[in-house]
Amino acid sequence: MKKRGLTLIEILVAIAIIAILTSIAIPNFSCSLQKNRMKNDIEKIYTALLNAKYVAFNRKIDCEVDFDSTTFKNAKIKCGNYTIGKIELKEEFKTNINPIKFHKEGFTSSLGSIYPNYNNTSCLPKYSCIIIHRTRITKGEWNGTNCSP
Image (cartoon, rainbow, N blue to C red; front, side, top):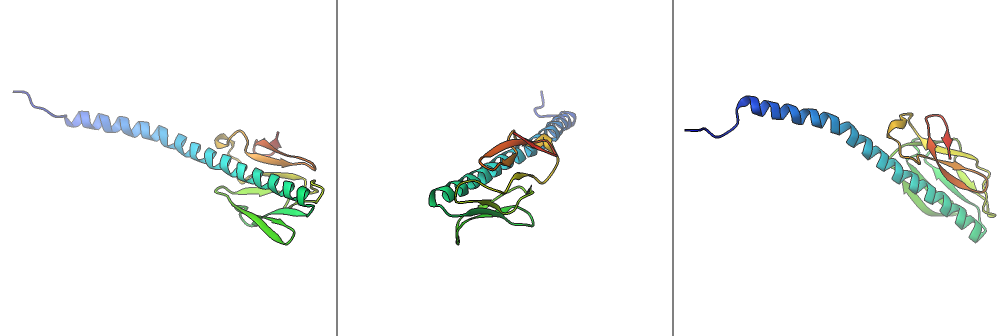
């Protein structure tokens, strides 16, 4: 008569294989999550900057994007005396300009960049920073020290 079931060694081997595969998958999964959050945050910032520039030029009023000065995880878009939008970010960023002001002619005197608050570049998406020029706003790649278009 044959017995059905698994031996203890077979179960232990299966558990060991699952543990090894899990230890490989978890770091890749967390890196993918971070890349996705960063990509979404960069898009939010980029859209907010373009929106402020557009409103400033079309309505002929000064606008600004003002980041929370402690974590840079929140920002308000203000035009004149009104707040026209807010963004909430999942990741922390740094910038060498705050607030970012757009004049009624559609250009800015706030030149600089917005970049991630950490130097681990292995888990960053292709576009992980934003460069602000006098007349244009471009997305770039953060290499840990510079934002290159």
